[in-house]
Image: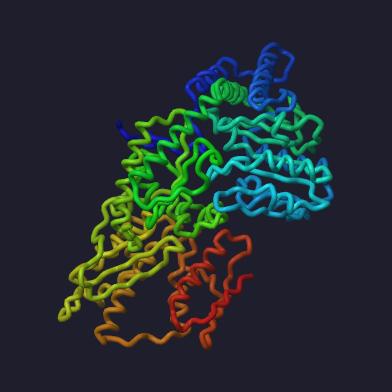
Length: 394
Length: 207
């Protein structure tokens, strides 16, 4: 195996490699079918169809109607349109909001901003595996609670939150509480059916499912009012002013088709590969612990482990020099020199966070790649432990 | 983050790594909680006061390992007096520079070397255990690097006031409320001062 930069890519939580079929379909829209959508001429009409095709594809993947899908420039725009739009249309004068300490930064930064605008926010705690209980949600609900936001799958440790239990709690709340879900890490990794899930709004992103970067979607339940945040020329959508990039939409539609044609088989493959990875790490490297839940409570593509006595940036860099890309929760590799907030929130200490590595696999990850990665990781762990003043053999 | 080729070389193939048997002096600085810890071992020729052998162990990131490696290279074969003059800037220069956010690693490496020398001198009766004074605090503050620019907080005039009386340390910092590094700098200060038994309480005032 020749090891060029990023030859083995195990940071699919961050972004995924575009499928070759996606790149192929996009090429046509970047060259021949470059037309701008929304005009009355035949070229514009032709461009319009890709908007509908993308909406229909995303709708199909979520058990929704195409008219309830709004295409955006990505998950972050979808989250912002939903949260600010729900509040501006339904609770403009303030109220109480509930989220959790382990939510995705999109939700937490919005919560912090909303607090400054006068909303009150309750941050639900998480248990040692990252689960935020429905009971905690129940206990946090007040008469003036207007919004609950949740991250379906945790982006650090893969915890799948109890959505059905949340739904039951919200239905019994006695008054209307709007519910937004970030599905960034859940989309394409587990079934999400809008007819059952019960959320009012939900965000997804194309580049997490082997689609292009820079395109995502927001689902809005029929009848739910969303205030308009973006103003400009409305070409195809009442929420999203401005133009579209047809190539990105075509790529998104193709990525959805490839992922959802047989979702159970895709999920099973991810689960098998990540189970294989974890087992191999646990049997090859001593003094390793899994961060987050094991089994069905964990999303199929995420393995997060702490390798005791050594630091994550050093491990990630050595693996990188061997052609393997992984992520770490170490403060040394973070923008603010702080340990990962999710790991700290589930009760890990600084050392456990510093020593954490996150592997996220994709449908392109092979067992041979896993074998190579764990062999390299074992070498890295041996070498760094030899240098560590903290290392104690078991 | 871009590391120089030299940093990568010393990270992948560090010099003088491991524990020395029967060292004449040892020092450990940093802590696992803040993500980096370095231990330096010294063997010193008692007559010439030359560092005959030196080694290190490191818990930390790539630049932590590389700076500890280079500091042992710089100190090996030098007299204690020469080795005391080695600064974190010398270590950085020898590594062809460090990203600003990683400068604190070179400070930790230089600090651990100096502490090991000090421990040797105290053990051999060459000097007394220094008293803890306001100057000690200022010297420690000079070791705290503002990660945004990679220079120490004293040179950057971020320290407005230092007070010390009966174990009570008071420090007024000039660092804006919206500064990303505010908590990090305060945490570093606590960490640097808490190791002194004389310090009972640390009051850090931020605007």
